[in-house]
Amino acid sequence: MAEKDITEKILLSYADVFADCINTLVYDGKRYLNPGNTQPAPTESFYKVKKPRNQFCDTSRYLTEEGTILLQYIIENETELEERQILRKISYEGGSYRQQLGNGAPVYGVITIVIAWTGKSSRIPQNLHTLLLKNGVPQKHLEMIDDTKLTVYHMNNLSPETRNLFTSDLGFVADYLNEGNFDSRREQEILHLDALCDLMEALTGDTRFTELANEFWTKHQKGDAVMACEYLDLLEARGEKLGEKRGEINGETNLSSLLEKLFDLGRSQDVELAVRNPDARAKMFKEFSIPNYRDHK
Image 1 (cartoon, rainbow, N blue to C red):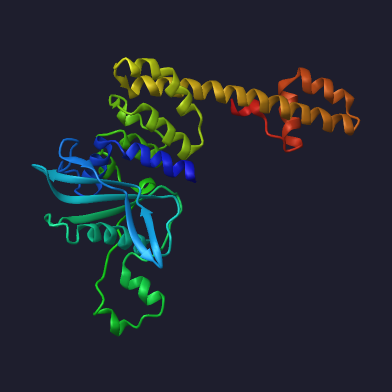
Image 2: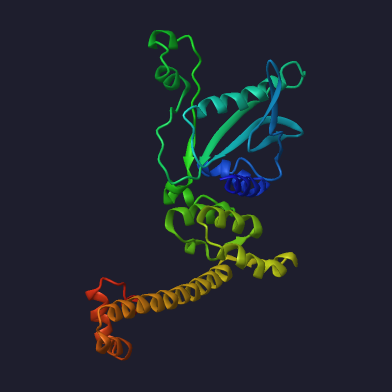
């Protein structure tokens, strides 16, 4: 889980990816943010419970205009959403507003979104009032309490229309999580090869992504464009070889299991038949409910 959190932060730390994420999810594709009008914002804020403590959000950037901060955006990455996730949002935004108190500069707003990378659905409270009601606060008192809403985007449940709005490397991730491939982006350039491949491996457990990154590293270092079509062709080729290798191993294991059963039953004639006659072997696989690799090649 910690590895996923780190790789998610790394990809979103790039200005173009961060801007693309906010533009797509918050502004429905309108290009309000770009690397030129944003700058990194602090991810650490402070509070006091008996003694001073600090807290860190995942990724944050300012939207600026002529050197003046207009807004701060915070992106939180979660693999498992918490019941009290709304309080985490309030805490981060409160830390930012607290730092603005008394500094004499114009006050700016804070927008926080949560990106959920898990495939698990969650019914956590989507606003503060709902959480308070679940914890016993009477409805009649809620009108005196400011409500705060939680905005969560599930990366594995984005519509094709939304995913098509991504223009950065984040689009590769979103497509793969929803479609199992990113064939529609074959003509798109991969800009942050290492960060993308590290995140793909962390999310899928497939080591082919990082292995291929190493093969493209020299080209990437020279400043040459790495197009998704090149990457995909190698990825598919590597997958075919891996599948063939696994099939060979499974086939040998299953044949060994079949021969062992025949020996145990004293069916020595069937042993020779299983080795020499593929059709007879297939019938024996079926007889003993042993998967037949030959049928799946």
